[in-house]
Image 1 (spheres, rainbow over the protein chains, first blue to last red):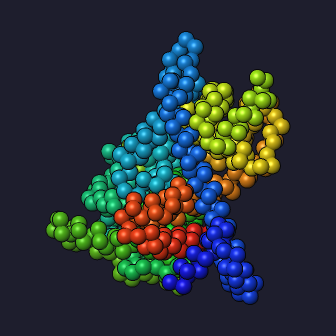
Image 2: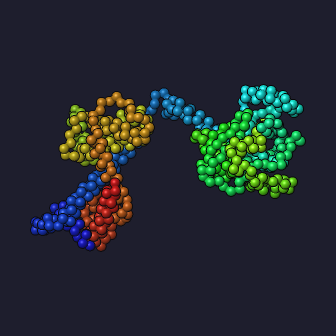
Image 3: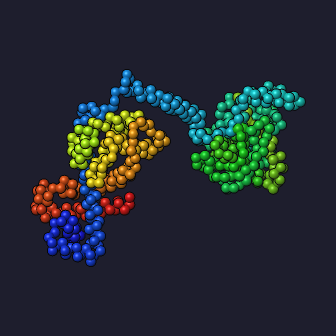
Length: 367
Length: 187
């Protein structure tokens, strides 16, 4: 209530409505009381603001009225463009932009469609580059030439398979069961595996899981001799950040060794079934085993980030057990698949470890 | 009547928000501005906006007692519009400020700056007015903007007497001030 009385007094003072005595009293109060003085200044400023606001508001109102009348007369309409309609003129002016925009849009939609069809899940990320090697004509010729020359002394009766894709796989059971990436074999009609000695075996996929990007192959070639003892084991639980490992794979026609460390516990776009690794990997490395210093397989290389350097993704090894469980449930005849439990690579020098491992890592090729 | 005298008359009319004067200024200048805006990546709506804003600037100027226009209204309006449009293009970062211009211009930086301040205050006040709600808004509008007296207002708003209306008005005013200054400090 006091505020209101004071405010009223201020307004009357500013409007000059006060009697002489009243004014003298108020001015005296202003001098003595800084708060009152402050209020007068503030209110003067505020009333000026309010006045200005009112003036502009009513001016704008008038402007709108004028505009409306002029609009009716057609003064404010867009000028008629000589000879051509507005749309045509617009088209002339912007057709290049529109053409560029349309072609970009078209290109992108086709690209997206292609990507979506090819890669159902994580391959939506366009930096995600799977590491299966698609061989071009020249490569194939060179490859075949080399094969022919090197294969001569071993006298392989079978015709050389035609090779369009190349990846890596490794044995998980000496009876001829291999693990590789689902994307490695997805495009293949015929699958062959080749060991470090250059022997070919035909194989078929018995289980594919596209979500974790893993597949299990079975070598069904009579020439294949079962291995009794695999020197490595497969790790059941997750690896820690910074864990060091080595890889073996076939980015080229020959087995290639690589080293790296686990750099994140999830893969592309937070995929928890995968790791992010720092290692160098190239097309052809897909499906390659990742082995820690104890000789345990901790993952399977699947893809790399095409934009970032050394960022590689790998499916976690425990997914392999998940796959096997589902496989066994589906078909009882696979009950007998037994993964190696103990690694006898532990404590060995790295060179020795690699030597013992390399014969169980296969090149997976097909057409 | 020569141009200088005509311009003086128009400005005087503008200061009083005279409809006839506003209309004349529109007729004499709008097409030029529209052509300019259309030629520089704008639309008809943009042209209208810009022209309106320029009219407000001119209105503010015409009301200031110290104001004397030392060029034609045409040149002045063109310069203001050009500057305003340039600014808007920069804000949209559509094009680096190379605007096609053939007409003569005068420097108007100060005016634009001043106008921005006024415009800002206007927006703050409008916002505060919008926030106090009814019947406060209409009450204050009637008294402070339309300058009606308390007698008229109390009968219009249905108060039993002018004193009641007055108390209500001051309550509303206190609220408006509170909101306005809170924004003002934050702005």
